[in-house]
Length: 111
Length: 116
Image 1 (cartoon, rainbow over the protein chains, first blue to last red):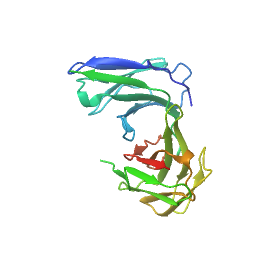
Image 2: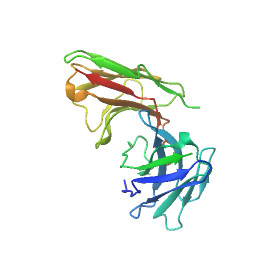
Image 3: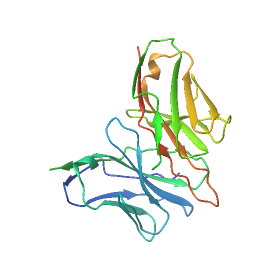
């Protein structure tokens, strides 16, 4: 699986959009971009994933650049409960390929 | 919503005890996984199962065994607990892929095990 680079930490004011970047310059054509988050002492929570098109669900939006070398996770209206470590993962589309989390980005949402 | 539940959130055991951690998922997923998560080491795969009674070793299977007698249930067993098995244990499940689609893994809340 391709490696990813994320900033170690970010701050966001409550109610504002949180934009979390991820670089994956060695991504190959059959690799997806996944985002998970982990709130302290809880299990990881799936957020969103995509291959090349932008994606949106009830939690977030995922913007993938045209060359697929980077992406941005957008939480449109961050709340205090969005404070967590966010992991960007790039992985192939295999049946039971496992997950490898890097260090992620610690997002702190403040009042 | 996918739901993955784990038998305990916190567990304290003594060295040498046999420990059972149970995981149940309600989405009829074929694949189930056991990971441990430690500070600085990230998520490491212990075992996974892609079908009932089937199991595959992950990256760190030593000291652990697993059991999958029913599709919805995947158990992790520490035959003789040791202090270096103190960790957060995470169970996950995912559907079987088809047609090149990747699988999304859904996690349980985790069990924080302390071995004294």
